[in-house]
Structure formats: C-alpha cells, structure tokens
Image (cartoon, rainbow, N blue to C red):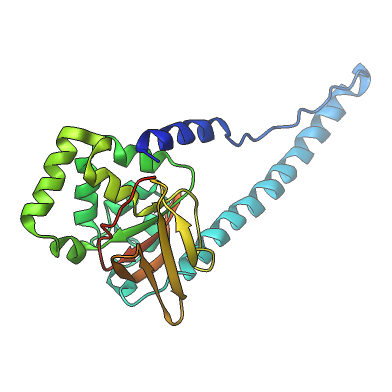
Length: 239
C-alpha cells in the first residue's frame, strides 16, 4: 500500500471527530417563580460541571500514566528525564513524528523521514499507528554511499522512492500495545513483519531478512505506539 492510501485513510478518519454536547436547561413558563428557578439553576450547574470534568481529567491522566508504565527495554534509561524534551511524559502529548524529533535516540530516523516530502505530516495525522523506529546506530550501519542514494532518490521520487518504501515497511496501520503486537503483522505497504518475545524476556521483530531487537518498546505518543529497534529492516516488498 503506497503512502497515498494512508493519506486517504487519514482524511477519512479525521471526519470521525469526537464532539462534546452541552445540555441546555429549560425555561420555566411561570414568571412569578422565574427568579427562584434561575438562582436554583445557577447553583446546581456549578457542582454538575465540576463533577463531570474532574473524572474525565483523572481518566486521561491515568491512561497516560498506564501507557508510560508499560514501557520496557534495556535502552529506555537513555531517554531524557521527565520534563525534558524527548522524555516519556513529553512524547506522550505529541503526534509521532513530532515526538520522535525530540528523542535523542531517533535523530537519524527523523532525518530520513524528513527526506521524503510530506511523510512526517502524514504520520502525524494518522489516527492510530505502530512504529518500529530504528535508532541512530542502526542507520550508521548502512554504508554512507547507500544511504546517500536512498536520500537522493527520496528527493527525486518522493513517496515512490525506495526510502519511502523502507520507512513505511516499519509502520503498522493500527496501534498495538506490547501484548497485541506479538505475531505476524501487516505493514503500511502490505508486506509482513513478525514480532516475537515479550516485555519481560525481550522482544524481536523481523522481516525475514533482518531481525532487530526492541531496545525500548511500548512508548506512547499522541497517535502511536513506538518500538525503538536495533536495525533498519530493508527487506521491504510492497504488495
């Protein structure tokens, strides 16, 4: 599946927005008691608003904390401390490409995504995805001439380039937690990845040619779950 397909899916998902309705209070037809009714309505509205907003805020905070608590892997301690750019608490509020841009483990990946015009925006706009994100040393293993050829091709061919295909080979079109991600998965380009292991014993992902270790997995962003991996998987086979 090419990037254009993701664009259409993202646009369709954007239509399905969540709206919050406010119930209107009815007016009392009895003019003699209108002042009393108005006062009572005002007094009862305040507790109602307070009661409805507090649980929602607590639920959101609890969900975010739960996602952060599920993060695992030997390289997670290399993430910045809470409150700093690229920290878990910082990444959770940003869409995935923006969040990755603050993560010191992923600067090379961010540069590769930026070489494909429009890809960062599409990843940010996707409603729910899973990203296997090669860390910097994984890109350093690619011969410099080969990496230059990929980026030059991206500048020329954009979403039809080999680099765009390889990057989408690392992305799943749904958001999967550390338990759900295990097994055979279909990527954005329609080929397969296989994830094995678990958070306790260690996790790996392979495309049949390259097998990568998950260095820090289950990282939540606003629209994605990120698994930082040790290799760039290059055996991309578009459907």
